[in-house]
Length: 198
Image (cartoon, rainbow, N blue to C red):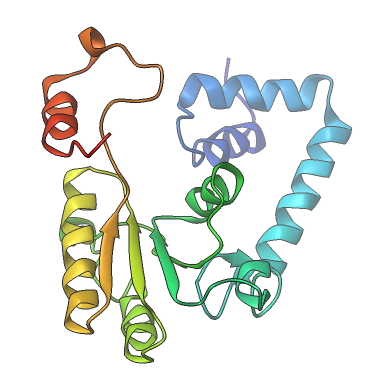
């Protein structure tokens, strides 16, 4: 039995979400159309409003409805501490889980030449200007330890050091409550080599 072109279009549109394959998209589409049409309309209206009205903060590049996000507009934040994160969700995690009172630069990705993501796409020209302003004391790299993340961190670290800014990196290794026997050798090796005074 052939499905309607509208239903096919909805299923295909839902597949743009991360982790949603054909089966999941089909389940979502049927769920919304069978019994939850009001929710589907509310979802579409919220999505349209967000796409039309949410842009990027002029200073840190996170998602924002205003020219400056709440963090950048807060004059009580320490402008001498800059934390570099990959995306707005990482900024949100940092805000919720830590007591960090500095400011951010949001990359919106990692360096990946094969995918066409270079320094320009990550806003590194803006970061370079911030480094050149002379206000930064420390740049904290909060970038995932993937191959692309390591390359990105190295690139940004070199930029910051060229401006005489101290560069630090989030500690990596054994998670809180983790059992050593369940760690992979790379994580354990890194944790061992990065040990500190106790």
